[in-house]
Length: 176
Image 1 (cartoon, rainbow, N blue to C red):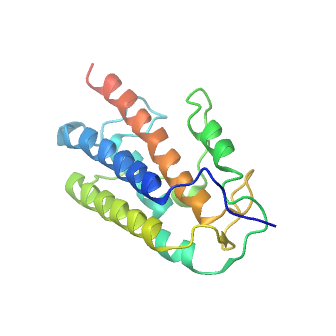
Image 2: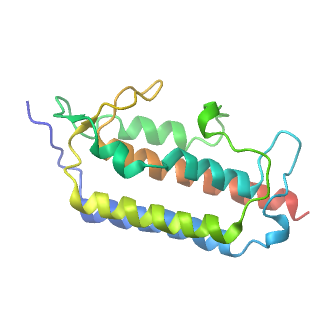
């Protein structure tokens, strides 16, 4: 069975990754440190907490997509559209697993910005250097199952794009 797809371009994906992380980085750089840890409401996250969540969700991404991989017996992008439809549907309220939930603490803006840049560089490097057709067997994403490297990269991008929108909404609330 052919497991490649005609709709996939490494260069386009690398550019989307750069754009996704650069957009978030540019937004974050405009935020005053005094509101970095300010929550819009009691049950909402601050910008610092959203960043902690994004970084926790992607910690060890390189190892995650290189360890315990197998050949894929389906189209390598089969779940990309579904991932996109779920993560970029801003009307959906989602619950994060405990292990990637942020804590209430003071977050270091510059440290988080540096970690975001490192994450972007790592993902772009992986896009350009790995066979994205392999399936990663270390973790089965609830609802979605096991994902290919290509799908995990897209997950990271859609997840980051979702939280970029969340940060924009937080800023509207805390600046008022």
